[in-house]
Amino acid sequence: MLMTIDEKEFQLTRDVYHSTLGVIGRGTVTVEAKFEGKTYAVKISWPEESRPNEVEILQAAMESAQGDTDITNHIPTVFATQDFPYHTGTIRKAVGIPGCKDGHPDSRALRVIVFPRLRPITSLKRRFIRSWLECVRCACYQIWLMHICL
Image (tube, rainbow, N blue to C red; front, side, top):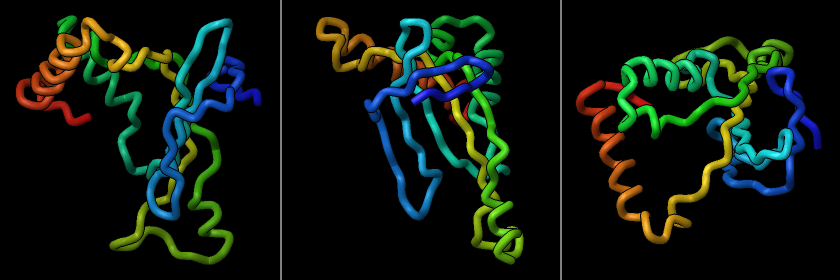
């Protein structure tokens, strides 16, 4: 199946990395895609429109890191992203369901983000512990010192 994101045409494969399809939640699915001979992970989700865009959060984290490679080497690189003009608010309005109220989620938008496919940390046989510690160190630095909530 072909999918165009940021004017790039990706060939989606049948490999599903992650899926949380259900009645409640963002309905996130992460699948494998190919583009120009390289493998990518495509995250497809329905976040609430009021929720901060993940791409903007990653950009803010890169800026806050100020070039510190202990941080920047652990922040995912966004290869492509696109918000599609499909909103659950349109459906709600069409069937006569009122807007957001206390306890009800905001309208959701279809968002797609493409990341380069990384090797799983478990495949790093000789470097697993060191790599895991680097991830923990990066997360602690972000939370405690930089006050970044990812």
